[in-house]
Structures are given as C-alpha cells and as structure tokens.
Length: 204
Image (cartoon, rainbow, N blue to C red; front, top):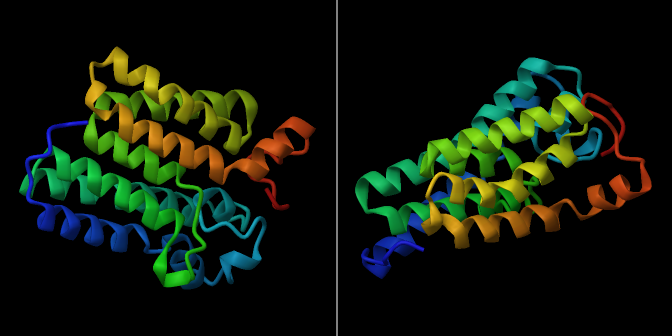
C-alpha cells in the first residue's frame, strides 16, 4: 500500500464518487439503446461485455468492454491527479465494488474483469498491458472468457513484481479474490467441462 497522506474526508468522498461511477451498468444501457433487449434476460444475465456478445452485436460488446474498463480507469486517474496515490488505489477499489454491486440495479452487477484491467492500466500501465495480453493470449488459445479472466487475474500479481509495482499488491490481491468469488459458477463449469466458449449464446 502507498502511504496514506490524504485527509480521511477526501478519501471517503473519492471512494463514494468512484463507487457511483463504477455502478453505472453500461452493458444494460448500451443493449437497451441499441434495441437488444434486457441484458439481464439474455444468456447468463450478466451485465458485462461477454454476455453482450451473446446478443450477436459485436459493436455493443466492444463499447461495453471499453466503458467498463474506463469506469475503472477514470476514477483512478482523477483521484491520482487531484489527491494522490492513496486516493487513486482507493478509488480503483471503490469503482470495482461499484461494478460488482451497483446501487442502480439492486446491487446485482458484473464480474469485474474489464473494470479490473482498466484499474491496472490506470495505476501502472505496464502491469495493465501485461494483464490484458495475458487475457488475450488465453482467450485465443482456449476461447473461454472466464478462464482467460481467471488467468489474467492470477498472473497480475506476477506482473506487479516484474514491473516493480509492489505498492499495488494488497489492492490487486483484493481485486483478484473478488474476481474469483464472482466466477465461482464459472469455475464449477470449467471443472465439469461445460463452460461455454466466447460468442456462445447459451448461459455462461
């Protein structure tokens, strides 16, 4: 963790604003705006880009991916520029929690992969790029989004040490544990060999 230098009231404010931004369900909003229906009634019901892709609309999925990553990155960048590194890491955590448990839709959110990558890119871009590359290579080789996400999250800690970003260790560990908890059903299907591949329209 970085030194805590920012006043507690400002940290609380940064966390609250980051949470609210992280809570914006871009997948649902994009699917609705593009006439794709209620995303929560499609495929797995998840609000992330992988489930948007199950509608068959690649543009909507790409927009969801970018915006979900941005809502992790933007609070981090703003908090760092205005308050400091301690606020930046807290904002990243709060935005991530917002995506997982969004106030706007009854605290039933996504699994956080794009937001996780956005946070890493904003905090330390080499770590973020390495984690994105991990996801991409795994996705190309396995065609399974959840497995790619789990591998990217697991190896993020390795990239921290490779690029000398040890102050992010606690935050990254927390985010990784949350990603694994949110992927509990996916892990069960991976073990059973029933996890769908990228682009499949059935639940996953």
